[in-house]
Image 1: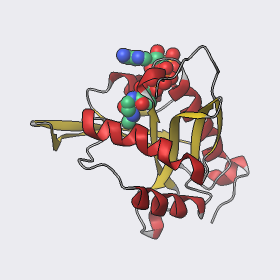
Image 2: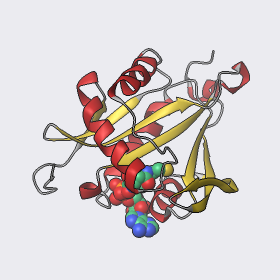
Image 3: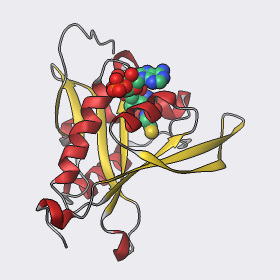
Length: 183
Ligand SMILES: CC(C)(COP(=O)(O)OP(=O)(O)OC[C@H]1O[C@@H](n2cnc3c(N)ncnc32)[C@H](O)[C@@H]1OP(=O)(O)O)[C@@H](O)C(=O)NCCC(=O)NCCS
């Protein structure tokens, strides 16, 4: 599908089940052609449905999409980093934009909306794991206040080369101090 960026300015809205095929199209293309994700095999529709059911049942794991006149051109979500209880105030963000729409502010709009959502929730730390050569994602996160945590050097192997990932974090402060729920 070819998108014309002049047609619509995307709006950011919560994802629905009807968006899952478009999410998969964007994500699975990155799996097969890029190193932003170290997934090696495309996700099946069944796996994506299970993933969405888990997120839809948990307000602290929101999924947002960028919708340009009915076409999903990007998505972003928060996920748990661990099921161990002490980690319950930490979330990892993920953001992907369709290649035709990259570099036009869609990623920024998605991530800014996701952070705004996180501020309403019992969340303290948002972390991002970013492939270390991904200058655009690193710049996007830094411009929204994320700071360096550290790097896992040579933690991944994809397309015949060792890959590193850089962790950035955004500390939103104690949720109680901004009137957000705490449980
Ligand atoms: C990374 C990604 C989500 C960014 O979204 P985007 O819509 O392309 O980015 P935006 O247009 O919102 O630009 C984000 C910032 O990066 C900067 N930027 C853009 N291209 C850049 C580049 N090549 N190098 C450095 N910075 C760059 C922009 O100036 C902008 O900064 P600002 O908001 O302070 O002005 C998107 O490009 C993408 O989906 N890439 C492939 C998958 C991926 O890498 N996902 C992230 C996994 S961690």
